[in-house]
Every structure is written in C-alpha cells, then in structure tokens.
Image 1 (cartoon, rainbow over the protein chains, first blue to last red):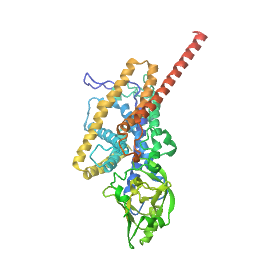
Image 2: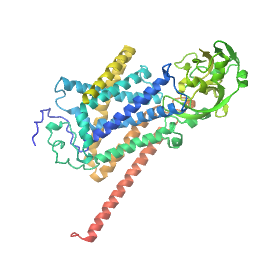
Image 3: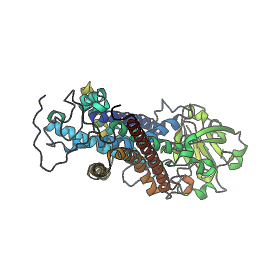
Image 4: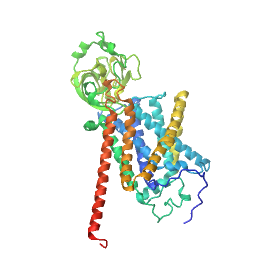
Length: 400
Length: 145
C-alpha cells in the first residue's frame, strides 16, 4: 500500500504514539457529547420559554413536575458533559499539532470553526456550572449570553459533524480494538495509523485498552451524576456528596434562592401595616387577617430552580382565581403579581392560561406559616413554573 | 447530507451569533472574547499537556499491568475532581437558608477518590491473583501441557 510523503515539519515537534487514541474512540465519545448538547439546548429552550412564553401558548399547569424534570435533566446533563468534553478533547489532542497548521483557506476556516466550537463549548459548560454555584466572576448577563452561546455551540457541532462525517462513519463502523491510531499525522501520510492499512491491526495497547478508557470515564461521569442529582431526585439525596443544594437543609425543608435579607424586604414583609393591594375592575385590599378568613386549599407543588435543584413541598393558601374573581376577572385573565422587593430582576411575574386556575397565594409551607425567606406574608406558587417566577413577599396583584 | 448539516450549523451560528453581538454591550463582548480565548489556551496549553505528561510519566515508571488500573483510576477520578474543585472554592460562602454548598467538599472528594482507589486496588489484586493461579496451574501440568 502506498502512502503520500509525510509533510515536512519542525524537527522538535510533539509526536503522539499511544495506540489508545483512535477515531473509533473519538466517534463514540463525540457522539455522546453531541447528544448531550442537544439535550441541553432543548431543555434550555424549554426553560427560557418559562420566562417569555407566547401569550397564545402559555405554560401548562400539568404535569406539575414537568419543569422539575426538564431543568433537572438540563443541569445534570450539563455537569456530566464537562468531563465528557474533556475526554473528547483529549482523544483528538494530537490533531492540534498537525503540520502545516493551515493547508488552504478552507482548512484555515475549518480550524477556526473548531476553535469556535471548543471555546464556546468550554465557556458554555463552565459558566453554566458556575451559575448553579451562584458564582459570577464575569461582567456579562449570564442568561442572554448562555442562550445565544447555546445556539452557537450546537451550530458549531452541526458544522463539525458535517465536515467530519466520513471520519464519524468510519469511527462507528470500525471495531474499537481494531480501528486506527489517531496521531498528529493525518491518515493519508501515516503508514502507522493503521486506518489505511486495512488488514494490519493497530499495535496492542500496553496498559489500559480503548474500551477501558470508555469504562473508566463512564464510571467517573456516572459517579458525578449519581452523587449530584440528589439535589432534585429525592431518593438519591442521601448519596449527594457532590450535590450543590441540599433541600433538606433549607428552612421548612426547602432551599431558597434569594433570602429576605438579600432582597431587602425583612422589615417590609413583617410590617404590621402590610396589605395586599388588588387592582382590577373592582380594586380592593386585604390584611393578613382578611387572608386567613378566605377559603384556603392545599396542594403539592414542587419548587424548581433554574439552577437545577428542586424540592417537593406541601402548600396551603388562597386560590389565585378566588382573588382574581373578587377583582372582576376570571380564569382567562392575565395576572401580574408584584413583590415588596424594591429592586430585582424577578420582583414581578405574570400568570396566565391554565396556571391562573392552578396557582395559589400561599401562606403555609409544609404545615407551618411561611418563613420570611420563603416569602412571608404571601407568595405565589404554581405548578410547572420556574422558582423565581413564583414571586415572594407579594404586595400587589394586578388583574387584566 | 453533510452539506445540509454544515449549512444548518452555519445558519445557527449566523443568526444567533449576530444577535449575541447586537444585544450584548461591547465591553462585555470583549470580556467574553477574552474568556473564550483563555478557555482554549488553558485547556490546550496547560490541562492537556499536564495529562499527556502524566501519561508519559506513568508509561516510563509503572509496569503495564499495574498501569492499566492506575490509568483507569485516574480517568475515573478526573471527572469527580473537575466537578468538586469549584465547589470546594465556593463552599460556605452563601447564607445557610439557601442550602447552597453547605457540605465540606474537600472531605467528600477525598471519600469519593478513596472509593475509586479502593476499587482499582481490588481489581488489580484480582488480576494478579488470577494470573498467579493460571501460572501455578500451568506449572502443575508441566511445560508440555
């Protein structure tokens, strides 16, 4: 079999000889990475829709756990993808040292697209993870950049898949132990790559096999998932050695995303002068005593944070629809609830569609009066709704 | 097929990339660009050479049979460590009511790595015992068997 001449390259240049790296290994890990990013994009868009739904297609109220599921999957998949991407990049690291760095304009553009893919993927995963830790060492708005980068990452993956499709097909068709050896020299120039040697198998791995790499990486990533998803999968909470949130340790068995002190509402929320102002065709106000006299119902709704944690909770409160009807509205009304919080991105939220009927203005949580960190004296709670949209420390309800 | 996938990727880039540029303040875009370049520089210039260097060192110093399990342990422990380090850096900094990073992740990481190490040691011991058993069986049966 003939091979083209190995392109001349600098004398001192990295040479990768490990037979572990292979296109077959990369194809398998890379496919998983692609699937994970697609899952993250899909669930991320569903989360984004929570914040900006079209008025003709409001969020459903059922199943109550829908957002808990999709956002739990989003964050768990994102966390698992961090090491997965590192394994994928390790498997193709020799490609960085291909010589010459650029053979043509097309080749230069391809390498630039890989730079965009790698850099945006790393930043998307890192900043997403740090967001779950409430750590923001960057100046830009996380939500909008995370959303736009999500498209850029998936667009880059599609581009990469298109360019590398022959390699991916070969990688999947080849058996793992028998496939090529991936080095810094392209197949066409490397008689030792074995991919183009057909019947010549690659040298045996001296220690860990290619399958061993997949098994070990899978075990590590599986451990990360198993020990972190307890923040949203209740039965796995005791295994949560890497759980970011522990819902059992929050006040009344539920964590909070923003405390009353952080929202600067401690005094306002506990003031004897507190009133709920209801605006609508028939405006009125309610005191705490008035609220206690209104008919109350109980419901089990999970509270789910965009950061991936969630907790099932038992709520007691006044049906929002009851308050809306007294103001002259009905189930088709568009309701805006306003917090006492003087400033804050989520100090107001809009309830519409099926959630108007299902939502409560909660006064009790898990059998106790609401803790001030959970929104005392009154908070919104609705099924299948992002946590920050369940506005706390309510002062005003506007019925439109 | 491949061309359609490429065009789909280009379209996603173009539309959303453009909106990223139009809806983000310029100074923030510069910071983002810095982060993007730094991410690749740190990965390609620090992390990957470190991993390659460790692999090279192991190949030079550890016999193949033991190396197999050591490599496996390092690969399994890597993801756990990568996720635990940022948690360690942020633990205990938020109000307790948030129930956020209340655990001692240094201890938890040590537990998890100890489990990984124990499993690798057990598997290594099993491999050694199995090889010894095969060797002694061949010895009993004699060289011609």
